[in-house]
Amino acid sequence: MTSYYNRRVGSVRPSHLMFTAGIGSLVDLPNFSVLVKGLDSWTYEGLPGDYVIDEPRLRTAVNRSLQLYGNAQVTELRSAPWAEGADTRPKDWPAQGVGVPVTPFPQWLRCTACNVLAAVDSDTFEFRNGNPRAPHEAKFIHDCRRGRLKPLAVAARFTLACTDGHLDEFPYIPFVHHGNPCTKAPRPQLRMRDHGGNQAANVTIQCISCKKKRNIRDAMGERGAANLPRCRGRHPHLGTYADGGCEQEATLMVAGASNQWFPVTLSALALPPNRTADVVRLVEERWEELKAITTRELYDAISSLPQYRYLKEYEAQDLIDAVAARKAALDGRPSEAPAGPVDLLSPEWAVLSAPRPPQATSDFTLVEVDDVPPAVTGLFSHVRQVERLREARALVAFTRLDAPDRESPEIAEEVRLFRSSPGWVPASEVRGEGIFLRVRQDLLADWVARVEKTPVLAAHREAFARFRTNRKSDRITGEFEPMAGWPGEAYLALHTLSHALIRTIALECGYSSASLAERIYADTAEERRSGILIYTAAPDSEGTLGGLVTLAESPDFERILRRALRDAAHCSSDPLCAERLPKYPADYLHGAACHVCMFVSETTCERGNRFLDRRFLVPLEDDSDLVLTPAGLLA
Image (cartoon, rainbow, N blue to C red):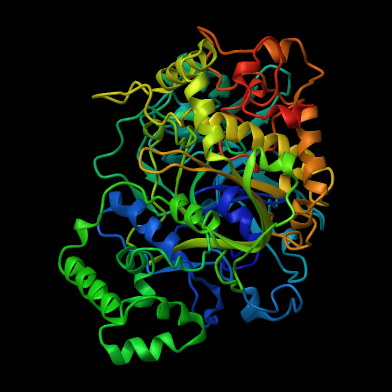
């Protein structure tokens, strides 16, 4: 990571730049904080091309997601820039200069000795980072006293943010003078004193020139909002301001607040081509790879390459015609691409649930477990080992103050990562292993028909409508559908079963529960699905140890399944947990589930521990009619 002064000031993991503190966010360093700049400032000049992550399906989904930014088109997914030698050869300055560009933010600093408050560009403070072996020692100092050891200057932690995703410095000088200029100096020096205490912030800002002072409490809360200026529409990661300013009110926020940045990401599994897939869909998903196939000679040349041998499964002329049709549709009319998000799960479901596993590749290997015990086949029609998989993830935008939510996509304003499209977005990839479980479709369909009109499912649906209504922003006008995004009754049963298995598997597979992830394939309006994929998703040394896939074999899996169901039948919070059901006015989205029995880490669950209820897996009271699990597994 490089700084405003082109010095290396720290390092973070690639996954950190995707999910914790990416473009537009603040990263806390030991001595100050920095803001990650937009893609217009990133450079890959002189780097080898191995930073490109190839995943056609994800690239298509990213382009569909970026449609709201006009003609922004992505041709590449790239990992963060990095050069060999940055860590092993500290004096290799070319390697030290490679990284993600950042700038100090907030740019108001406070001296820890004399409490002087000034901006970085005021020449009050000096930046020091003379030891290439210790970039974490980068700091600002203030020459306010004699001696060799100069006091440290730290970031003044207050910022302004708004619901449209803007971020700005706190206006210290206007705030102290109640919106008026200082009568003694055009650019006065300030002093910030923290008085401590255990009730909110108790920080006094004083003008050294005219002696006026004001406590930061005057800017907090609903009454304090009246003392703040209107949002200026600033995007510091882009170096721009919104045209015509911003209509939203600014909100005081501490720089380290957890709601200062939320990522908007997409992810897809790298799949081998589905032999039964329509050739038109194949061309759409892998357009960048196949768009050059316009003649039979090109088809023969490309399909002879090892990575493109799957093309021989398709008729050459059909493929050439599909490429020509798509090219004609795109020429001059880029806006005619289908509207709405790309369905990334349907192709995965088609491959995972195909009658025969596809041919193994370096990115994906699926193996059928043959010796499945009869008790397990009562619940699952397929148990498959995903011995090798690769998941690609892309960052497409971010939000502030409000987290993005697939149940309520309209509640948060997405902020773009660039001024003008650079043709790529940040991405990362992880390799791992997994277990795919296909619940018997007839069993699930009968269960849905049996329970969809029960009071329990009605309570879940009504809670979802209240949840959507309560989170609806007052800024949203027009039609509002409270039940939009309801995942369906089958999803609740599949999701609860997934959590029960994850909690049990984590005890035996060698991975922590936070290293596991889930993908739920539930029914949609267009397709019947009934699958669960539990896989490793931690971007570190864990991922392909084999400890997960071996648990799908007999007799381990039956034992794990029975233990998961047995554990789900009891919770140390019972009877409170067992009796829990969302009823008016509650709007939480779970029933008999809690941190003791069903919840997993936020990185593991795809829905934030929502849509869970143990009574759909095991009988908790007199509700055996609600149970999906066959009686043979509950014995």
